[in-house]
Image (cartoon, rainbow, N blue to C red; front, top):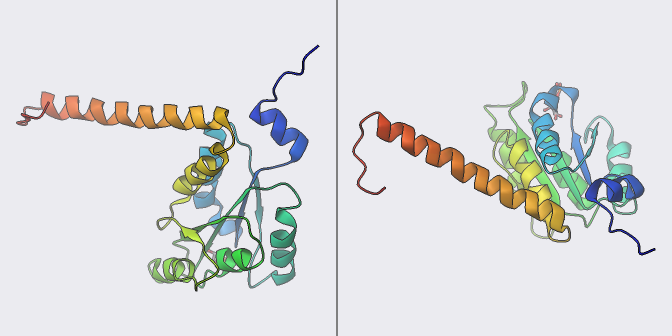
Length: 184
Ligand code: RP5
């Protein structure tokens, strides 16, 4: 009997999580859960845990150095304030790292979180999303996985179409309110 191709969920079960979501503190969870929720929409079940650059530096190094051998493909790292987590993870792995600046209680309006993650030096890139942009980090991670997974790619295509439908619904709503639109 010929072998059936594995689904993404089966692959993840036999190979462990493909995406690791980490954050500096449990106080980041409310924002960072957005990345997990998005990934689940594409049938990707991520790993999610706390790794603090400043409070658990040994755990950070172990997480980053073992991620690739554990079968991970992408790491999403979120932190606020002096947000060194994404950059230090990127310093210790060749996996792509997506950084999420969190507007945390210790942050100066989010600017410190953003600049700490965005302004990485040459040689150690972190793909930085918007302030509190964990959902986009989830989508971007799915897009990276989709390069080698047609099932995730199909779900991303459907997601794009869904976004188009939502906007076109708004176009109709606004038109029905009587605003002039000679475009469509
Ligand atoms: C950062 O400091 C964390 O990522 C969090 O955004 C912020 C505040 O952490 P807690 O004091 O709430 O643990 O390291």
